[in-house]
Length: 80
View 1 (tube, one colour):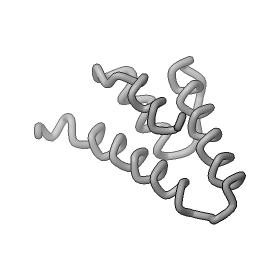
View 2: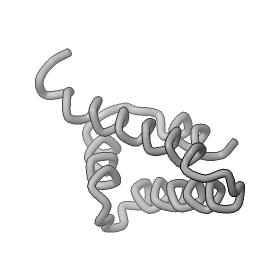
View 3: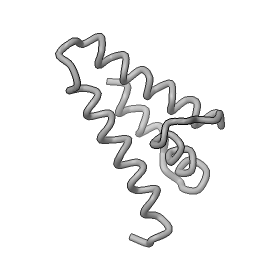
C-alpha cells in the first residue's frame, strides 16, 4: 500500500474496530445502539462537511475528500 494511502486505510480500519467494539461494550442493547447511532450521526456530519472533533472522524473526513471510499458501506456497518 502506498504511504500516501496508509493513513486513510488506518482511519477506516479504526472506524471498523470502533463499530465492532460498540456492539460488544455492554450487554445492554440500548447502550450498544446509542454508540452505533452516534457513529451514524458522525458519518452524516462527515459527509455533510461539518467540523468533527473526534480523531477517527477527522481522519474519515480526509478519507471522504481525498479518496473514493464508498461511505454507503461505512453506513452499513453502523445500521444493522
